[in-house]
Amino acid sequence: MSKHKHYRIFEALRVATMFTFISGYLNAFTFITQGGRFAGVQSGNVILTAYFLALGDWKQVFNFLLPIIFFVLGQFFTYSARRWFLSHHLYWHFSSSLVMTFLVLLAVVFTPLLSSNFTMAILAFVASIQVETYRKLYGATYANVMMTGNVKNAAYLWFMGFLEKDKDLQNKGKNIFFIILSFMFGVIVSTRLSLYMGEFALAVLLLPLLYINIELWYEKKS
Image (cartoon, rainbow, N blue to C red; front, side, top):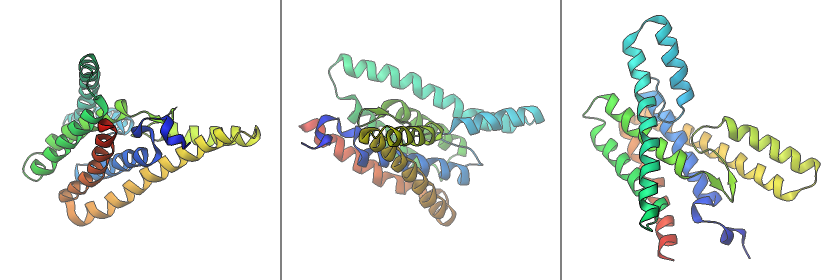
């Protein structure tokens, strides 16, 4: 029996790599087109908020504080929405994917027309929903927005599995390594397209989101 049948579809490697591709794409897109800010990697925003705070540049403090605030609001939303969906016996993971897709579509439509702060607010909110909702890869915890923990876990699990001759641990390490590669691939694709297409490059993100929605929809039906 395939190991895929023991886990939910959003824990499968093919879906997890799509999520990390999206994260890499989003962060590179906002960094290039939205004034050096990050949609998901809040460590970078926190560092730059403190940096500009030290310089007394209040405009930049606000610019980098904004995605942090909306990332926090995304956590409030995710907890409340998931609690409501589960209490009504509704499928939260598919619903959250639809919410993310709708918000990205909203950003695609209005980004060329409105302030970059609108785009950052929407995309930070999306990243916050994603990082809290999809946290498992074949039962193991991973991060699909920030890579620091993944780099540590990939090395630790693979090396521990190698020394202890544990194939399961080695496979977990390899899977997380693929997660890191998919994040990097998202950054590469986004960088090339953002430099060429500018803010219109955001529309490409709807393709992996559509794939994820289809996968989750088929699981919901079954």
